[in-house]
Image 1: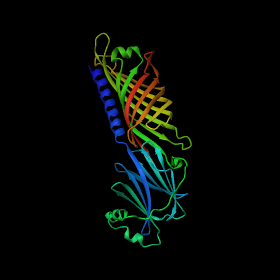
Image 2: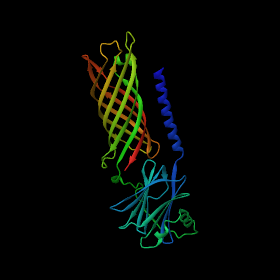
Image 3: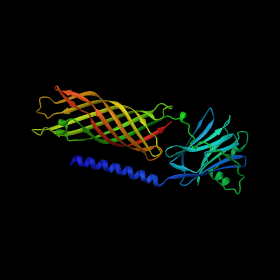
Image 4: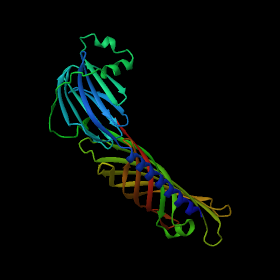
Length: 346
């Protein structure tokens, strides 16, 4: 009965993740248009979207750039590059930088102009003006005033030159990535005696951390994992209660295949395993415990729900043996896992 509840819980968790993923897919956001206007001594760039924009902005140097990452964006109708050459802005480059993120890069000359980013009803408005004018003294006024300026009739558009170049505007050398996550799953121990006492599988919980340190090899990362398993069983003849506890500390080098919605992965690794089996009070010894080293191979896939959140499905095969009372015991087995992973970029 307990094992049935475990299987049911895992199925419900997987169903919830799948439903959440489909809900996110149905509400795809599209960046429809990018307008460039010159209005009263300022350059105004208006980015239009369907359902509003969540964004992050940062500045890069050598060469100078202002970067906007627009979150939860599945597609864009923008040109890959706009030639501006006004107010210190040389070019504007656009593209899908990574799953669900549209990156817009403003290539800037030797000196940064003053700028301000405002959320407007149908997207984002980025204003640029030269530091030598008095425009910046008026900037702290209410955001509504800037919105009214955008709505003034017939502002004179800046002529832009569209260039058929690469669609994706990436800055891979500036990003490092790491993830953290929580996992749950079933561990199938290979040892026959173990299965007779504790059953064919046991529930495992844990967490993981991964880090991609090499910018030149963006598909390679280091993975650290921790899993904890505790189960109860009965002796074969007298059916006395036994308790078993096992912990896995794992390290792996993985190769990831970055697709639009999925990131499959494979990789080998090593494990440090600790275990403890507790016996009934009338046994000659209270418990037996120890540790051993093992190896594993893992494979699976991340399913990207948003630009930062992913679901994970994984399979991990462990090889680990130890000796107890001159009898070889197999602690290795197969681990099926599901989890939620949060990704960071810095």
